[in-house]
Each structure stands twice: as C-alpha cells, then as structure tokens.
Image (tube, rainbow, N blue to C red):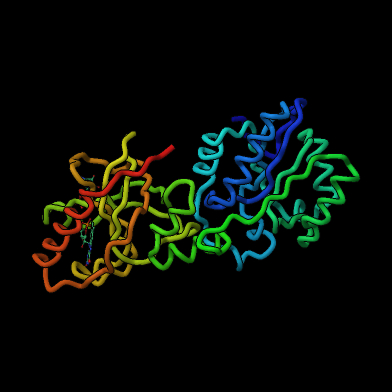
Length: 310
Ligand SMILES: Cc1cc2nc3c(=O)[nH]c(=O)nc-3n(C[C@H](O)[C@H](O)[C@H](O)COP(=O)(O)O)c2cc1C
Ligand SMILES: Nc1ncnc2c1ncn2[C@@H]1O[C@H](COP(=O)(O)OP(=O)(O)O)[C@@H](O)[C@H]1O
C-alpha cells in the first residue's frame, strides 16, 4: 500500500476509486466501504484508495467536541493495508483546509488523485460547514461524470453501527460486544514502564503501560486481554484502575499480568487487546485476598481463546 500525505507531488495516473471518511476504529460499517472500493477497483482495473485525515477534523473545527479515539493512525494504516487498499492519503486537516467547499473538494480529488469513482456511507457529510452530503455528491457525479457508490447503514441488532455506539459500549465495559462490530478487538498501544515493584512480590508481576488520553480508556475494572509483545500474542489479565488495595491510587494505571511469561520487558512497546470485562475493581481486606482473586482471574483467562489478528 502506498501512503501519501498533503506533500505528495507524484501522479496517480491509473485512475482511482476513493472511499471517504475518518474511519475511527474501523468497524463493520467502515469495512463494507473498504471492501466495496477494493472489489470495484479490481473489477474496473483502477486503484483502490482511502482518503482520510491525520487528525480528527473536530480538532480544528470544534476542539471541545473531539471524541476519544478508538484507534491510532498506525493501526488504521495496518488494517487498511491488510484489507487490500492500494493507496491511502492521510492528510493534515488544517484551518485553511476546512474552508474547502464541497465542489472544490471533489474536483481536487479528481485532479490530484485521478478519481474515477467515490464510495461513501449513507450519512456522509463533507466540505466547509458540512454543506456537502449524499445528494450534492449525486449532482456532482452527474456534472463531472464519476461513478458514485453510496452504501446503506451496516446494522447490528437492528441498530446502526457507528464509532459513537462502539465508544459507549467500551466506556461501559462491554468490550466483547464492541469487538463483534470491529475489524480487530479494541486495542491500546503503549510502552512498559516501572511501577511500585509489588507485583512480582505477590507472584503477579504486572507490566504497567503508558497511555495517551487522546484515546478511549475502557471502564475501570479487570479484563481478559491479549497482549502483543516481542512479536508474539499472549493471554493476559489486565487492571484498568487505581489499585485501591495497595495504595490510595491517585493515578489510573493500566497493568497486565501476562500468563506463562517471565521476561523483563521494561521499555518494550506493547499492544493490549481488550477481549472481555471480567469484574470490577475491588478494595480487598489485604494482599492475601487480592492474590486469591488474581489466581481465579488467571485460571479463567487461561481457558480463553487468543484473538486472530491480521
Ligand atoms: C488482573 C489484575 C487485577 C487486579 N485487580 C485489582 C483489584 O481488584 N483491586 C486492587 O486493589 N488492585 C488490583 N490489581 C492491582 C494490583 O494491586 C497491582 O497489580 C499491584 O499493585 C502491583 O503493582 P505494581 O505493578 O505497580 O507493582 C489488579 C492487578 C491485575 C493484574
Ligand atoms: N508474566 C509477566 N507479566 C508481566 N510482566 C512480567 C511478567 N514476567 C516478568 N515481567 C516483568 O516484570 C515487570 C513487572 O514487575 P512488577 O513487580 O509488577 O514491577 P512494576 O511495579 O515495575 O510493574 C514487568 O514490567 C516486566 O518487565
């Protein structure tokens, strides 16, 4: 897959079909657009392309309304590439860019990327003040002669699948339900950092990881997770919380005990996949009670399946 940004000066002279959207989380609705653009491009002998933004448009248009994100750009690019997309344009959304009107946006796609077709979802809005929609796209497709494909809403349990719906599930602990709508399980990326060094003393060393508040943090509690570290996926049990048994935790930590694992991984980059909410965080009477519970958590996780990642 070729990844380009606003500085791209080359020419895409083969012709492209372009899927438009911000694609946060890459859920099944997004995937239907991605699959469609890949299939149609193959059938018509053009390149499949995704045009998206490096930063959420609301970071410029309305910073106080930016949602917590479900996915970082690195993971988005990885999944788009795995889906067979030929070209992804990941563009910085700026104040100047925001002024682009609907028609200007579409003619830019035709001039710069040789767009022969556009794929969007039923509720797609675009251009300055969101003045463009599916109806104006239809008019523009007649005026300029490109192929327009508008896809129906993908649904689960009779309700439309959306990034907002998935965020709500995750902040309420329903990660398993959220994952059924996602291309890959919900994941946070971070670096393993030092903690209080108590974990190893109680027989449960935990890899504490950094996190970025730009991304969604699941509900406080304990999860069955999968953790990708040093090129391999492992089962884990993770705590998202304040560790009330050990200290009056001021700071939220995300820490994982990795099953059947004994390596020093300080400084390693990890990806933590949230598979299932197991229980809430408890303030135990003492360490023995915490250890007894951790043994149960581990035994439960040991029986679970590992995710299949792309
Ligand atoms: C799967 C898991 C579940 C946990 N559940 C709780 C809990 O319910 N209550 C609590 O106070 N601490 C809980 N902890 C946090 C432990 O107290 C924590 O791992 C311990 O403070 C070690 O911290 P350290 O890595 O900074 O040394 C949990 C940790 C893990 C890995
Ligand atoms: N099974 C394991 N799960 C998690 N971390 C492990 C495991 N085995 C060894 N480690 C290492 O031990 C560290 C955690 O030990 P711990 O005593 O909890 O220290 P800290 O408080 O610094 O997290 C991890 O960061 C990792 O380097």
